[in-house]
Length: 200
Image 1 (spheres, rainbow, N blue to C red):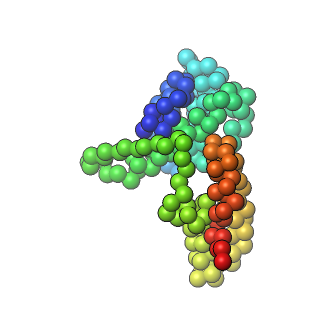
Image 2: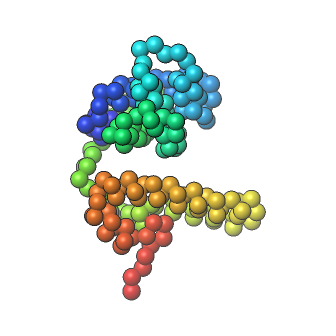
Image 3: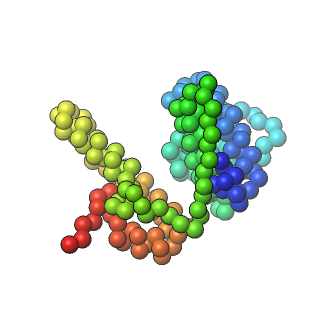
């Protein structure tokens, strides 16, 4: 899957993704819900022979980014600027593979294929109306649940969730703009982030 999505990734990123997929099972054995974080802590705490500082930084970053922490933090200086987006793509593949492993019963065969079109971005389906439909759905679900149950805690936390979703969407918009340039800027000017822009 990774080879299809990122055929230009350096061998070091590919190799660290393989190691990450192994060590995340160790993290799962410690604590299922924090499996990626525990795996990253094991990698940084253990004295692993045969790994350079750079490869340990890549491995830890893949594990942490697979857990939705896209900041590189202390690993930023260890990872070459040209590898940072490749590390994020590897983390995305790890998170997807982990989710597929969890959802597909072990006794059933799973044929998975993917196609990557690096010169295009999706503007069909829900993306015709909003740039971040997953966040829109989450925000609506949170607000609807809070109002339906009259849960004061959810009502108080909802603006914080809006702020977090907004911050994450800005990072994603910047990434997409750097990848697709003026085409994405025109799309972003036409389509709202969370709410549709209705034109009369």
